[in-house]
Length: 74
Image (cartoon, rainbow, N blue to C red):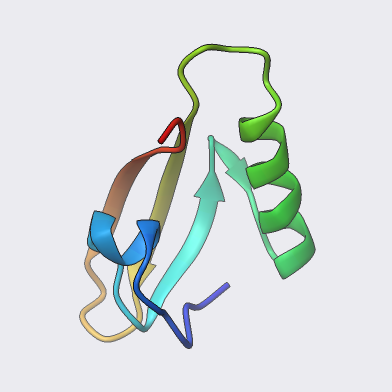
């Protein structure tokens, strides 16, 4: 899923930009908004004290692969 709009928040603070295509969340392939929401919900409800969302993808503008770790505990 390509990021087509991005407001101030946790993803922007982590460095994600418009045009970034999310390919995996927590090492699971995602292809739709529903799958992204499901991966986010699973990360939030994993029963762990530390909650992290790992994002892997590629920039549609530069072709550069990017990896991000988002701390959801805050």
